[in-house]
Length: 108
Image (cartoon, rainbow, N blue to C red; front, side, top):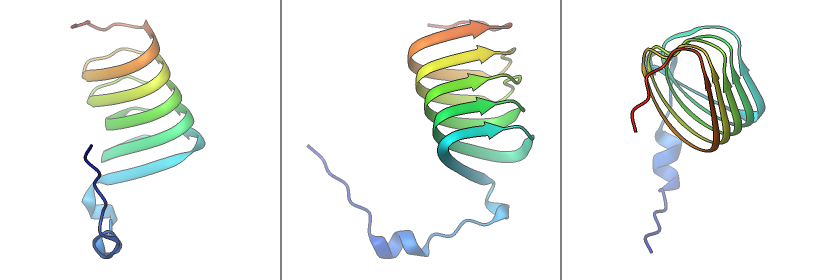
């Protein structure tokens, strides 16, 4: 078993500003209704709804619903994933239940 513990002094010295190009969102219910351009996004929550395009996202949640076109790369880990839009980018999904609608090519 490998256990990694981060140094608290190192973590406190890490600061993110708007020029970094990364946004982190978390909460019980997260809804992305406005376009987040030129930023990568990490989202964790119980219920995540994506209603606006994201360039690149990592999503962790109980239920993840995507209602906007996927152009960039997405990594999704959830209990249930609903993709209700076209996919022209790449997605990697790990879920108990996956429901796909729209236009996408599947590679196993």
